[in-house]
Image (tube, rainbow, N blue to C red; front, side, top):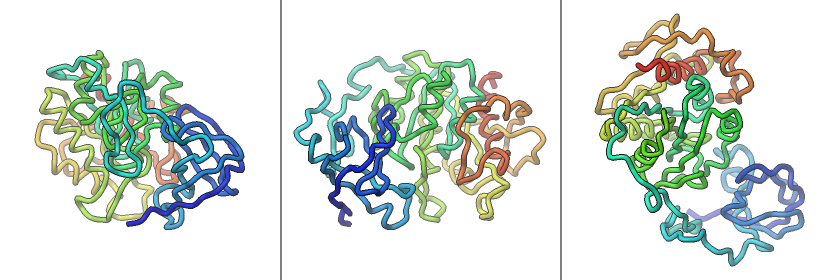
Length: 324
């Protein structure tokens, strides 16, 4: 399984955001993570990974900067870091982890943990949680760098997320943790009122019942239960998806529910016919107004194309806020 690397020159720097640069290399769209690969400027000699674009896979049609040969060689590790992210791969990097620095709660003591199976659920969930101090926890199963997420940046700007925690193999969060359990315990010790956990943008999928990133929701729910938390599983609900396995209550959600061992709550929009699983109905009549101005997009569909998808995610946030 060789890497597909090519050498090129940065021809355009289009946008710089916190932890992410959008650019072009020889006129081809590319993204860079400057905290990992160093700063990037026009004219830099770089290596990019073009495999996902060449295979028309999940990178969204762009390359990823692999190394900056002009100003990214010989970079020092983060001060005090000695635990490797992406260990023993060509991308390994030493990062300081939360397990090394802070106190951890022995119990979540009923802290609600909202378990998303898709990153596009995070914005409406957090809209439903408005007013609470929220820690976002990103798990494997989708994009690994937290800094890729425009939704997380927008939610921070709107004061709907206070901190973003990356759980290995994810990285480039405000806090790095090796395990889901550690991330939940860290957030509890820091007195956050709710945790929202999700895979990053995009989702790994093989077309099989157990081979998709949505099962990360089950891992989070089981860790939350074991630590005394209160898992709330966000149902993936769609009536705009042409694929039968995702219409109504998606097979992704059903697969995750089948692997969750403890008690949980599944919120459900009031007014929508309930599925054949136990759900808690939630009034979602204000979901559009509450989500106004937030990035709402799922598989190219917006709130007018697939409203129940976003309403169901909003229901999870409202369920937590009403204390159930």
